[in-house]
Image 1 (cartoon, rainbow, N blue to C red):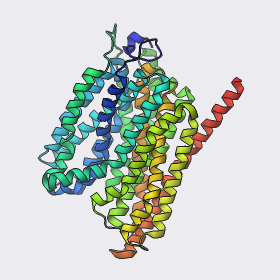
Image 2 (image 1 turned 90 degrees about the horizontal axis):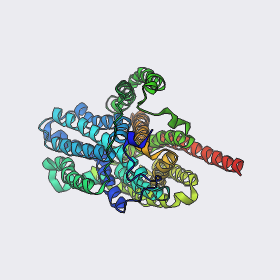
Image 3 (image 1 turned 30 degrees about the horizontal axis):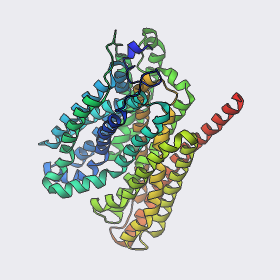
Image 4 (image 1 turned 180 degrees about the horizontal axis):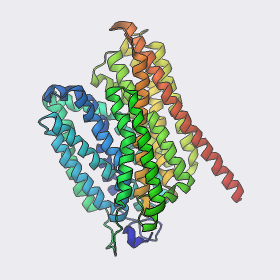
Amino acid sequence: MTADEVGQDRGVTGTGAELDPRRWAAIGVCISVLFVTLLDVSIVSVALPSISRGIGAGPAQLQWVVSGYALAFGMVPIIAGRLGDDRGRKRMLMIGTAAFVVFSAVVGAAPDPGVLIAGRVLQGLAGGLLNPQVSGLVQQLFPPAERGKAFGALGAAVGIATAAGPVVGGAIIAVGGEQFGWRLCFLINVPIGIVSLILCARLLPSPPPRKQTRRLDLPGAVLLTVGVFGLLFPAVQFDADHDLRLAVLVIPALAVLAGFLGWERGAARRRGHPLIDLALFRIRSYADGVVQAILFFCAYTGTPLVLALFLQDGLGFSPLHSGLSASAYAVGAALSAPVAGRLLPRLGQRVLVVALGLFTVGIAAMALLADTFAGAVPSGHVALIMVPALVVAGLGGGAVMTPNQALSLAEVDARGGSTAGGMLQTSQRMGNAIGAAVISAVFYASVTGAPASGAGRAAHFGHAYATSLLVSVGFAVAALLVAIRDVRRRGEERTAAS
């Protein structure tokens, strides 16, 4: 792949080009946009009761307000990454941001559930379009020595956005009131997005003129979209139906994805413009990073979901109280992600091993404390007792994201950084959906037969919460084993080289 084909040499590190002095300001603006798109995944959960009362949305419609965004968001990062690599990351980021602003306004002004759901789906597509460009821009703007710090800021944004949505949503609704507060959760994206667009136009480098633009691999894009949809749809729909028969849809989805791989290896490669360069997966650090992303996000994203169910349905907390109780998780992630980025150049893969170990210990401690104290002490005390474990889990989780992204992309050519980042983000979205579906399924199965109220209900929910977290621990341990194997492999390679 030549620089003319991808049109990204300006500002790309490692080519002899002078570093852009505005790179930190530029990536800060990009991360702010990314933060808002990720926040909208979780912020809506606390707004659902107000949405139901405000426009008369039923349970199934409310589920699609949540799931429609997540599903659309997860379907497009690989295609978006290819478009960014081939047609300019700045251009794709600005198109995605502008679309996100427009559809946020549509959602915030929605007169009925149908418009709201359609707006959320389109909002998710816009978020999925712009997100891969950020990791590609990190590769493009920063030399290897600075990427750990840049990915640290990116990891902090991901960790905080994942865990802080309910807190932010509860605060906005409290300010805006019952009728307007839920709309403000989406309308606030408009001024943030407009300011970000102006700053992106000024700060981000533009690609040089291109001799030609590679055609998008449309058959590959269709096969990939159908396959990813088939994998994600049953996972997100399970949250609404709790129907295990949805798992049957995974079989044809896997068949379509097998067809996609066959197309990419054959016809698409011969035509010279495959959607994904499958040679990426011959880079061991990248292949291991994708596996780790799937396993870790299975554990990480499902955990706040069942925590909210435990606190609200089991202990009787309000949404805002629940969100504030869970904020220790977000605080831990915010503190550890930038630190992990700074330690990465010196400690390498060992940072990831320690982070995954911390996360596993924190989740296991949360399960033990909830099972021991729920129903045995006042509900408010349960949340306080769990704070140290939540902080440890947040510290570990936040410190995983930075090295996972940085190490996965370290050996990837910066000119293909958005496509590689898009694949990594699709892996994260798959982990999100699978983890949320499996962990919540175990929770709902365990909570069956709970008493209607009192200490017995709290104890029953505490046991169900602990049982569901065992699944999260299993995913985290699997990710930890992959990281340990990678440390050993790198050590053997260094020994053989010496």
